Image (tube, rainbow over all chains, first blue to last red):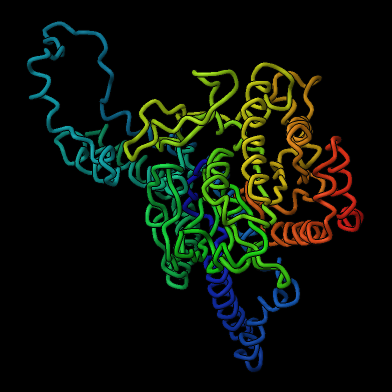
Length: 189
Length: 371
């Protein structure tokens, strides 16, 4: 029984409709780009260049694997590009952003300083303390909302600086973890 | 104040350094999202899998009757499915068909549009596929017994998927769905089909959980796991043979290999997974099933001899692609010819089933050579 792997955000599936859509959009963008480039470089009849670029998917009429090849090339580029960018974002975030933001005074405070009260939360007070911490992400909500809500609290404004990094890492993530079971195939009745 | 200033400056600097990444990623995301959005617009609407299946007290589940809808196959594509009044794939009635193919998702035609599966590719042959995804060998046996009278005089081809059917025979449930299974009898020697537990409520003791692996690698190594599994399948083959011979139907068994058995690389992987690479024989499942066939006088087609890895979907990795369906239709066409000429009947009555295998293999000599 196959297991499910969520599609990474930057890749395209091999569903027939997605393959068609990829070629439609690619051809349109390519045609526009070629036409604009021809115009920029002063070519006579730049529109003719744009029209000629519409021939991009034509090899697929003779050799159908051409269409799947387009998706494969896009996915390969997206995955390898994402890997490089992910490493870059992590390095910038870790070595620059965190080191600077860390200066705001955040600390783990593992040692109890003189005069401080214990942060131990009794069982009786647990519900009162954490009742409002129903994590939106755990309920299927967007994780960013949780981060923004947390950043809105007094003294947590520094967390806003993490948003771009988090957002980028989300878009550049590798394949999702395998779910335990396929959600639809064998959900029978 | 200085701390805040340092923080603000580093945050700003980080954002500036990340700006090219934001632009690149944003453009790629916009492209991929546009493709997906346009794809969903162009794609036919499909129903969830739960709309295709219904509970069946005897079989556990079965396809709903009179379907004419699209469904999304896992890790694959959207496909069109049409079922008859009884819920079996295609509009052709069982009684009007000259050949009946019984089995699991392969017989169902999973992952290909109705009308394009092996059942519809040979215009000279009317094939009725009876099966559903997730069936083991148990449900086909129950179906053969249930439809016995309607199978009279017909050629019945039984698809057995080596990847999961053999082990699923012994499982009381598929995920949380209760299914009939075989077990050593509690009343007498031998085996029996257990059905008492089948019901619409979820099976709570499912072994399906995180990280469950199929046991096909262990079925390629002689040992107690393999012995028990093949003993169960032997009982089912015997019971199917009896059901068919009782009404004069000709049963032929066709094994459907797993793609992992079909390439040198994946065979090595299978051997490694078996835990005993030296003793691992990827042909063992076919050999053991062939022994059972010999015992019960059932001709067998070893699918591995007719299919290659390129006959399977490369991403989904389990079911046949269009080429695989064509190859299967070709094999079935040849088998039907030998059925009509009486060749199969002759070999089925012989005591040496390997002759039957050889003879059926010879029918497909040209296919094997072309490959």
